[in-house]
Amino acid sequence: MREKRDYDDIPGTYVFDGQASRQGYHLNMFCLSLNNAVNRDAFRQDEAAYLDKYPMTDAQRDAVLMRDWLGMLRLGGNIYYTFKLAIFDGMTMQHAGAAMSGNDMTVDDFRDMMLAGGRGIEGNRSKQEWAEYYAKPENRAHGQDVNRVTANQSDAASSEQNENKDDSNG
Image (tube, rainbow, N blue to C red; front, side, top):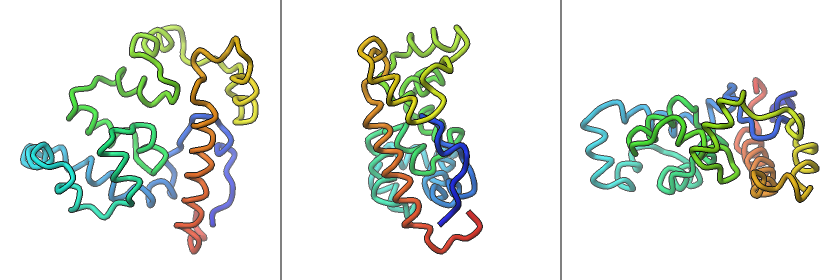
């Protein structure tokens, strides 16, 4: 089990560190394979069969098939690799960013937020602060899924710990 990192408490942040790299290796190699036109054609013909080439976890496989963009990041996906799948689907970076926001943000909302300088710091310093901030009715507009996201972060962390019990290099 790896030691806790300072960035583990930043809400909505999935740092692609050594552990995430190991956890998401096969997911990321699948995404990288989409650089090749032959592979894109094979994936387009039968997504599930194509994924059989990569020994991903069931959760990773489901995230790909459901296009759960945020889920892929939680499960070790690297944004640069998962974006290859988004491009395959005809998405722009703004579409992917909105989908990965974890709060049902529209593309226009995401674009406006980024043009305004990104997410504000208020309510975003720690998972506890995030939960308290979005518990207030006036802040719920873009925080509907905070409890789900926070719970999923905890589930992913537990899963990572169980999968990497023998990893002392974290």
